[in-house]
Length: 317
Image (tube, rainbow, N blue to C red; front, side, top):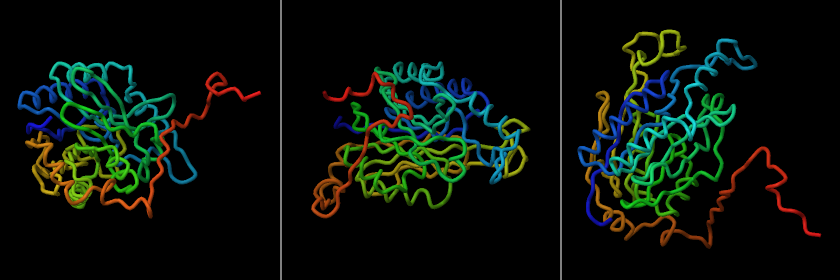
């Protein structure tokens, strides 16, 4: 794809206690962005299933309170499955609009939850996922750890699209692996709304010579039920996440955002040729690498806790 095209970052609040309603909201936003000409759109971290900002799940060190177990059970019930209706709805919206959609979700797999990004590639529908490798701080209480088997970069007609979630973006080796796969549209769904976030995104764009699309929710306390535990208080108008979504160019220039005003969709026209122009003097995994000194070895094998014998090669006689 050599012609310029439009991309979008969707800064919207989820409906944390109703994943189907959130999926329907996402479908409406996909259609709105597509009507404005967007070909690629990125939604925030944990958009489907919700990001439980300020909730401790009743787990002081050495204790698990009954109300925390109840909170986790309720959270688990809102998580999505890959064969669920929420995924089907978004896949259909991507197919109907022929757009590339990257959306954060909470994925249930057995009794464990994962912070996951789902990829939808136009007419192909759902094409893959990335599970967050390293949940941050208290997130480790409620989310499992991804492994190296879900770190793809997706080939699309608009360029290679990949996603790194929130503070995973502070993992230099993960970024290097993404660069080595030729990522051109680097998506960064996040829950980080601090002033320090966009400078990090600008660094990544400049380091990777890629476009960076970062999306965060603009979320108020009133999105949650009244009995939701929240360390930030119970005033319905309290802003729990203030957005800050942005689109960054391959030389670190801010093309759209950051926006802290409320729910919105940010747009920018981008040109894949700018990625190549940026590689002229810096290619982190190519001509600017020094493999004679530094090499990164990446284990992309799935790590399963239980492997049936039928999947284990027979020993040689």
